[in-house]
Length: 190
Image 1 (tube, rainbow, N blue to C red):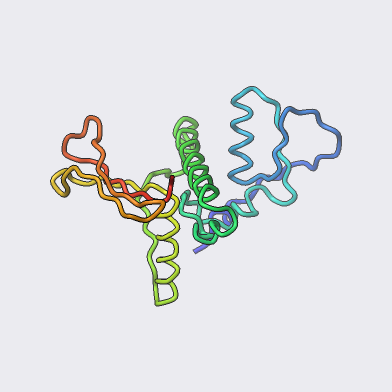
Image 2 (cartoon, rainbow, N blue to C red; image 1 turned 180 degrees about the vertical axis):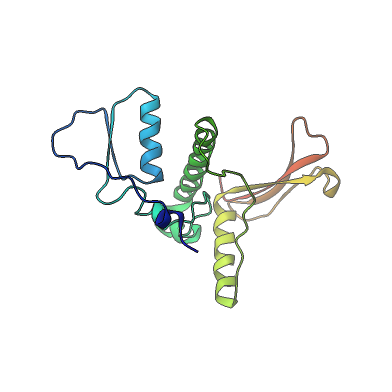
């Protein structure tokens, strides 16, 4: 099956052959670059977008076009270089980008088939199971994980361990949803 980026021809754009004055210069004409340029234009800023090759053909052209805060580089690997606060920042920035792109697609009536779905990271084989375990541990060390559950599945309580910093599990009520609550699992975020 051919990628959308291979089937749809990229528009031909002129080369920059003179000095241009602008308030914002975006380098890269993929989804991140064009989203940045769009947001600057919405703020009434003049913008120039620079691209060395074809529009939407670098990282954007290699993607399956799904948006996720589950990173291909794995959080446990990023944690080695950037620590727990760095991987929190990476996850939050990806989530914020998705939260920004969703209303843009809706408001601009972009035929993007944008929809939110659950995502699951799974393993295949022993080596992949070890990688999955490392990823889970990095998430527990650095994030609070929340999931909606039926109220009757657990009773209101707080659970924590004796590690320093500690890990915990607790429940949180959902406003205007008396049948469900959020199960919060966190750890090492102190």
